[in-house]
Image (cartoon, rainbow, N blue to C red; front, side, top):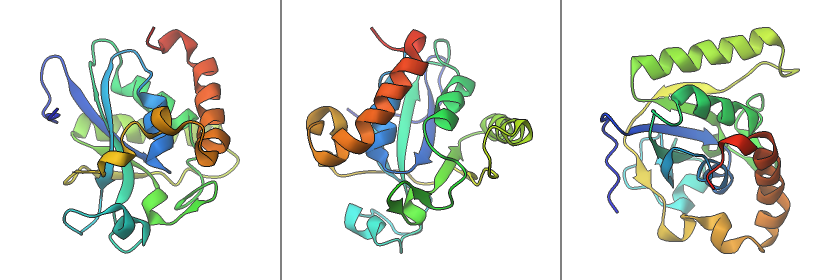
Length: 186
């Protein structure tokens, strides 16, 4: 299915980098109002990058998830709330044992409105002292998005018993479902 990133009256797009895209995808695909979550790459200079190239840390791309959603059901602010609470935005180019610029915490904005909302939320969280360290999340203008290889799509749901999924992704998903239980799809 071709996902059209253009804004319409009933859909919008958000793209986040928050470490391994398998973790991000597993969380956002369960939210009410989210039509699709696709793992991919954004923010670098290499055209049509492969997973191996992105993992080398030389392409400038981040592992991201592109989220197509209905803003009448789930707002960009709602998505930001989930984003901030489901990863550590204070570790530079790192989430857990995943290290490198490809794992950076990043919000790729598609409009000035998204940029302003993300900047505001970031400043408010920092001012509130929600984290012991400063937030290092970057705000980057959305650039060309490249879908990841097919085997990365819906990864957690298809490979939940693999060690990385069981020990890294599942605890994040379980915590997310507990905290955001009222916002989950049935």
